[in-house]
Image (cartoon, rainbow, N blue to C red; front, top):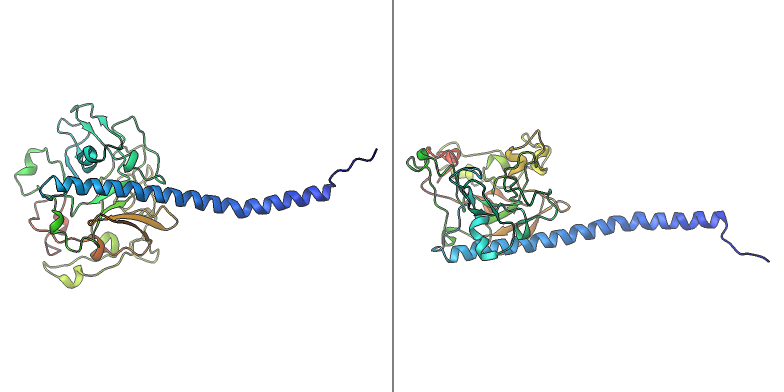
Length: 303
């Protein structure tokens, strides 16, 4: 009785065809997966941005501070924008600070999470997230606000109101940003706004608009004198706490990053498309040289 079977050559041909198809399709599947994560990230950021706007609507038009207080383990708790908008979004992490007893949200789950970002412990309150950072020129940073020296020396800076933000459709209020490694635990709840981190130039005298008005973003350009790979990576144990990797916008989606704007819309921006003066810088008032958080701007830039 004759039995029909594949020859060795036929089997090898079939295997070769499968290997070729796999080589073609696997990158397509990976791109589809990344596209799905990008869409989820945009959706999360949109909801978080709506939370900011709802908070503003109930607070005399004023956006929440990016942070105030002293730290998660301090008797004066570290309160950030994610905690303040949690009642409006009711989505994301919410844990109890072991020292103060306050319920806090450290921006590491739910709508506060970037699906393409590093994993962060969901049960340890000392491991903060903040995949998304707010613009601290709009949502003021008053870290160490519980210290006795802070309030009496011109330190406290209020957040801006939505009506004070010029060209709200252009001004970024939230960006996906880098994270410190899990070993560090702490994170910045805002993204860095200093001009030199983007285009290596600050005004040298008060009111020098010719310099301040310079625009662009060279942080991703390897030919830039101040370039470092940290500008486009998350921190590791050797670089924890560096502005470049822990607070700089991150382009996790095939060279694209998601940003939310002060008028409520969100969109993806291709690496190199960000404009510091147009998209980030907001002229403020009331900043003095006493401010350790914002003193960098005084008197270099025309606040």
